[in-house]
Length: 422
Image (cartoon, rainbow, N blue to C red; front, side, top):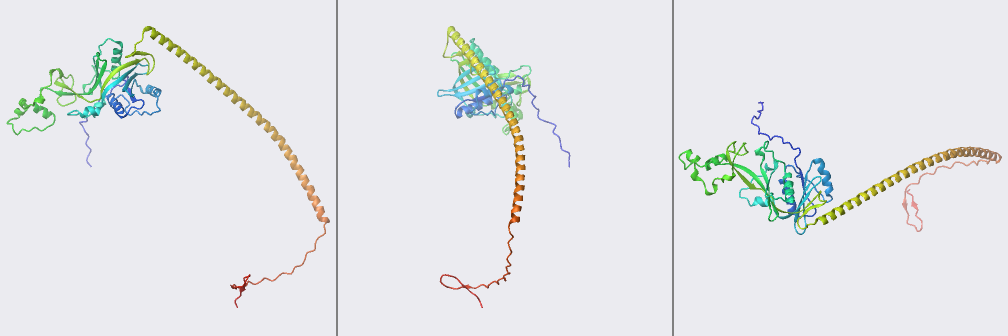
């Protein structure tokens, strides 16, 4: 047999990324939300890939504490929780382990399949989710405290970008958060990033795409290569704002280092329009730091804080009482167990003494029984000696009767007789 050939031109493998300190997330829903919100949960999981639990299983019996306990060993830093009421769906972003929690109202949303269905040239989404998305924030320059906190939470949901070590081929998606300060709404969009070489004629672009051109109407190949006149109106050059000089070679034909390329964005979905309602200090609990519809004075805030401190003290006091009751009951249980064991031991000792006494009485009874039986036997022998002996009767042996032959029944009244054959 011939020797097996070894492949020399192996595909380049991606470098192993350092994932220490990378934010990770759980995306799930609470309560009855409907089919569309469940699909929205799956779409948000795709946005947060690869550092999210894509196959997270949630049951009706799970509570928030279950997710918090599981999040620690897996290094989960954020919860994205969706719920729904009669008015609208809501989205919560929780920072673990100590908060804060941002609650948004979802005014409008579109699923990933809805966005892709309206595209003329949809892209294949096979390799885009192997690398994290790039977070882009716009309009968060407001000096208000809740706006700054909101921008910080959005930034920390995605891995940080190291400009000196970044590999441009790994940046394939971007998540855009646009904040409108006049309306207080946050628009979310999810795009696919693609680089296209510029300054090329239509013929060269076809060659780069591995398409066979039609050269039947041309006299020379130079006419095809410089065929600017063959461009259609829809295939003009990209605007100058989108053209960049590539510092690295990027995935795609013609995207060489130091070459001019145009950056194209193709929307992937989902779309979200969010409105911030409130900010809580802890994980879905704690002091309300901001509320859109309710504002409190300093005096009310002070009273509320004092009331919370008092409630916490009462809770700690009840907990201490419960712990004391549990310890007291446990001690009583142990004392009862010791008394029971001592009683069982004492009873076993008493039963041992009674068994010894009973064994002695049994031996005495056996001796008495044996003596009684001996005296009875002697008396019976004396009686037998005094009785006269009976004479035996001589009975002659009787002859054996011969078997009668089989016969027929005779028809007689009352009894049945056999008619012997002659």
